[in-house]
Image (cartoon, rainbow, N blue to C red; front, top):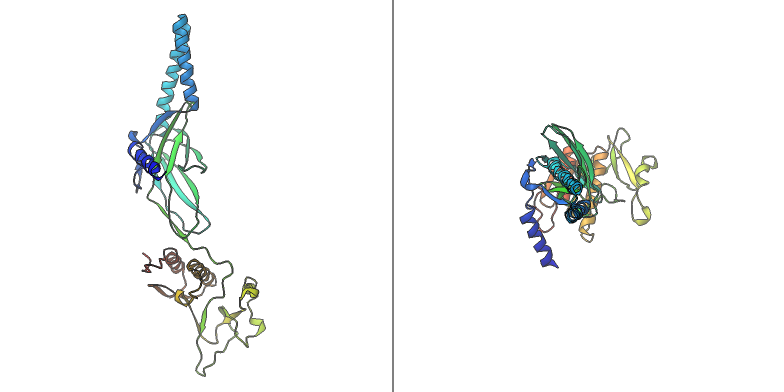
Length: 332
């Protein structure tokens, strides 16, 4: 079975030019557009054959005229069908990173630099089971569409091969081409649903005791014995499953003990599954960013100093998405 699949792949690479991913703008030249009769086209060809044989057997001049007129329509159909798809310019747009389990959205641009309309072009992934989108393209303009593909795991997701096809104008011929953009979607780990509180480390004051102030709110931390009930972060506690071992969360105010937030992968229990630890780190990054807290980040050889910005969040999430436990080098 594997040998047959490999043989089919080589055949398609040779005949339909389905080879390596293509970067930049791609031009659908004449060699890349293929035409075959559709089901209706095969029936139409059979009809022409029957008409021709009947006209020849019974010497029907009007039958010959009808046969030749219909044949001319088929030839014109082939010309307009090929012209409808050929000489398009294709360009892949940037892909927004997503979390595992979400749909990756691949943006594609179809550019028509000719002076004629293009009608009913169906675009979708070549694999079976994927819906196609139909679009028309005006002269000297472009059409933009997004194709969705599910994600199941973190890392990078290469866009599947894209197929463009049309049955314009009469549906007798199927004209198609394929395209494999050099495009990757970055997939972050799925955040843990009920992650523990952020791992704050409280720095003791000069007397060796941490004092909690009650001035400006600066974040949250794990509950410590002696914390006032009025300082409990009830909104955060509502998301914690106390029966499963979760802890209470206390609001942190400026004017008291200093605290630092460092998201260190090595401090997580080694008994936890790797993907669960990465999911927990992802959840902590999102929680810290949503709270506007500065946080340091350590993951293998990747280390970022404490910061609070969108760029910092994206760098941390990228490192989590591309982390390889067998080769924990810094994320590229």
